[in-house]
Image 1 (spheres, each protein chain N blue to C red):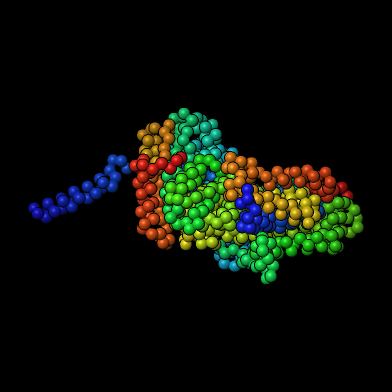
Image 2: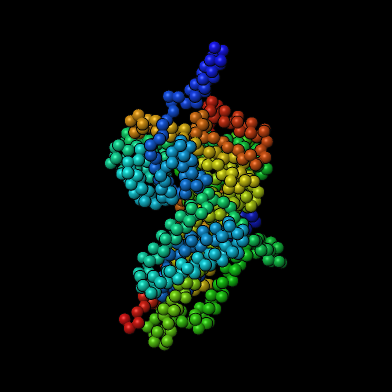
Length: 310
Length: 319
């Protein structure tokens, strides 16, 4: 057990936890926009998969990680718009259409990978950025300030989203449409326009999350997200539809995941307990969801399509 | 006359060469139709690729349903191929056993093969096949024990079952025989690339300077080894092209060793009922070195000693 409290182990746990948290953080932050406006998108995982493949393939062909990230953005925009068409214009059942988007992303990313790439090949990863001064702080420096650039950008999106949702007119419209679309509509807010924008933002960030995952790993493999998109949707509930809560939830999930891995690597958790240990992050999430559900309510119009005058 | 004799001698030499190369034992695979249902991509440099490569090495172009990680989907594909009258339907995944047990009796004229497993369910139209991957794992462990400076070797496993567990156990035994300590961590997922990557990074943080792993998710661990310049050992398929600088060697599955006999029996009307195993001895398991990795002859000799010892029974992998 004493092996766990060494500098190298603690750094590995925290640095690994942050790396594991970031794709979840970005995807769930995007999903927050949609849900705050009343649209649930269960297709996040499928969009992440397409963003991951798009980002990976772009880096493989151009050797530019930034172009790869841009492709992730583009894929996310297209898939976000597609999701919005189904949920907002066609008023499809949001749960079912989301599952459809997921299955499309799962199958299409696999097909494109098989046909365009075939055998897995490594790609360049995002450059690491050691923050001057801070990265030299004992323990903390290696845990927090020696990550790739996109990890800092992901965390910078938290205060930005807090500002957008809580302090801007657009944010106020999002909240109004999510709580009472009829009232918002009567005040001249276009429910359709707001929901299109939020679902597209959600899709974009899901695509980015996928691209970050693949480029940070330097590889693509079928089903590379391993259902992280669904965890991201759960983390929106976990974070009570607030960016700060979502950040805490993502970090908790990533850190518990990383801690469990380290406990296994250091053989503190016996092999026969490995399966149970692997479920720990999910158990934490479920427990937290129970707590959140009893204290916070989802947006009143969540999953309800809007029809003027209905 | 002398000229005629010379021609006869040449013809006789050709006949002898032809006989040595094949003769009556050759399997005629023209018109023999094989279908494969597998859980990952056909070119995953791991489990699925090993069976696809083997069927293609037999001169057969198989029909493939890849990425069948949903067992129900795989079951539907197996049934569909059987319905189409394929001569051999290969269910390449231990998780497909229950589906096969249900489907095979409905198609008594079709032969099925299931692996990696050692059970034909008592059905006479099901073959099963498995790999003694502990043997190659042991040899890799011996080589790894010569390469490690810290004496600390990391093994990234998926789920503690089947040939993945055999490989991991064999590797640990081989490393121990060479005086090094290998530690295995199972991610409990065959597909979580990110978790495999993090496991590899955790090993590096704990001082591991040689890594290995098995199953399709290890590509995430290989990129970590590549970044760190740490030697990597592959298994199931040759993983050299994944990271040409750090892959030392791969244990490659050559299922064609058992497929040849299986197909011959099917053609003779024997549709199943036998359990096959590929080993170092029958050359179904082959240690392939990366020519681009500078491995000393001394270490290769130690590996060969381990191979010889396993074949003659003087070395036990402990599995």
